[in-house]
Image (tube, rainbow over all chains, first blue to last red; front, side, top):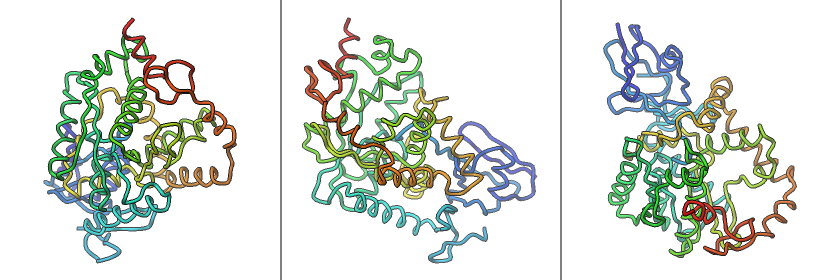
Length: 67
Length: 312
């Protein structure tokens, strides 16, 4: 019943059968403006639903200047 | 996978841009970013296909995405990377330099690399410590050094224009910071295009209408290998704090950041700020006695003063 979200070296867990990216971000207290979600190499939108057992990579997008 | 589909082809939408009420699949998103960049370049008269463009490359998502778009659009765009010697146990500069070099190689594009320590005898961190300007964080010294080196390389290489990867979040954060201090002098100077003056090259920001997550998405979808680690000195920076605050506004109200910055540009056009005063300030620029670059000071420019201080 766990969905894993990997952010750099950290693994964040959401205990749900399934959840949308929008709701997962909310549950993890992350701004959807600041992260992109990628699963199996596919960029997910906020309405995409992920399920228990799946692993989603979160890519932080904020940089200090013109990165 | 999702009920959100591409507005153009009905495939899975990779990106949802609420502020534009637009959802696009990966292919149409890539096409969108390239077309919108071209639109900004033309609308704001940034440069022509006949001109030589120098892209300031850091190895990060914005600058490499910009270089990729400009090359795809057929512009004569070379890259320029400054190795600032930032290590902090992470090898930040060497990693980002390698990323920039690998990108250039993959595109068969020309990249000029300046080794700051090799050119000036000390790293950016050492320069900050010796001049006591930012002993913990060399960010202000770094900004001065980057501008100086970019100007010098542009002149030496005969480039017409410098293009940087500043995105909407960068510009909105600067505007937010200036607004909080009501620094109208700085606000007057903020623009996607800074015309060439007094020997300084034209500087442009073709990505200024894209959100930060949009440039990151473009880089990911194009398979651009960029350095995802942040500069170690950027952690906890004021800019990042302001970006988080602006993102809270965006979460509440889609388009908040875009409206904040684009309406500022409209206010500038309507002469909300006194441009005459800024023109007068610029007209009084002097030439640095050491390097010849323009400066508001008499004698040495800010960068040459730093170097002189570091040698005392």
